[in-house]
Image 1 (cartoon, rainbow, N blue to C red):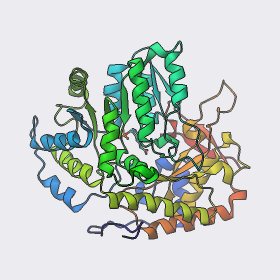
Image 2: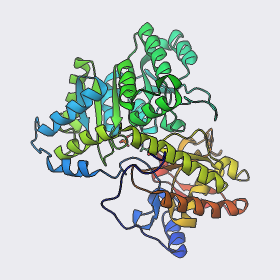
Image 3: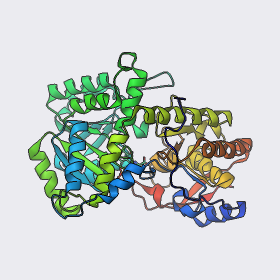
Image 4: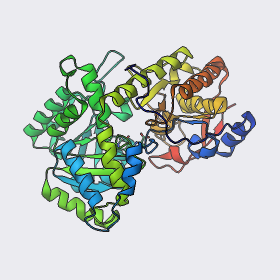
Length: 455
Ligand code: F0G
């Protein structure tokens, strides 16, 4: 099979809009120069996120019809539970409506005032849950560059140091985010997870996975580990799940469906406490805020997502798209993972200082060039307001993420994105930065902030 050809054909289609240059300019200004606030009807290619944006398969659409909408103990739940148990090996399976509900429910059982959660990198909603519990989120990613195969790993030396030091007694969990979304979508190796397991045993701390992209992690592991090339993605996923005490996941990613999340655990007592919280905020624990039919679509999606042909296509198409963007003149971050291609806006726009948001400048210009929507992962998202009156403390890097919805866009769509990017690159030296005109000050200010161009 050609490495990056789509291993599926299209059965249902939906038209996409082509707003004119004038409409794009007006839409961006009306949105306060914040791409999150532009209505989807004015977006041609939407690479904002791979979350909840998948195209379902024919088998998933037909599974919807077998949804059992009983309030308690529905057959849909039994099907979902069985698939998750087989995939993860965890006996306790709790559905929730999306990833952040799982994070809040599970992490708030483990963390309280003054505690610490340590991770390769907490995703921003995970960090928000940790901090809402009164705890601190400590990220210990490995240093990595374009030659590092497992740039998602946690730095085990720093982990040991932290756990053996004075703060060690306050660490209540270690979290491996697979793949490491906030750190370039890079995979965590089985070797790294095994060492972390040993360290956690030595210090009697639970090891949890944020398994939102567990299948993509498994494929990248088998692709980058010469000794594992004959394993299946499901076997590798199972090996990593087997090293942890439990997981949560946003199933809006590798569940290949539009909504859903889960908590899965070995510990029955902890699961009982989580279920009590699920009843308070999500609903009865066998549906967890989802419709029965959603559970059926997810059960089918969780089987499809480990198909090696699909995963190869996913990884290879990301790599091909990165090559196209590079040919267009964008500085691409390597190696590519599966769910997104990251571009270094700081390198493209060195004349725009971090507090004038170079990543936002690139995102907005891509919208103006072709109604393409991407995400800024620079100082707008990760910068923090400095001491009063001074500019923001900048993010470590000014990245833009081109996320790839699952099974949605063809190579032609992505070529159109690269052509739009080429037009932006041609006038990169003339682009201006932005300043924040209004923000709500919260940890996720990027969703609501209004900006103004700095002329
Ligand atoms: N964990 C990871 C690694 C994620 O990437 C996300 C969401 C979540 C947890 C939260 O899940 O959205 O279902 O509540 N990431 C999306 C993104 C939003 O665009 O990367 P959720």
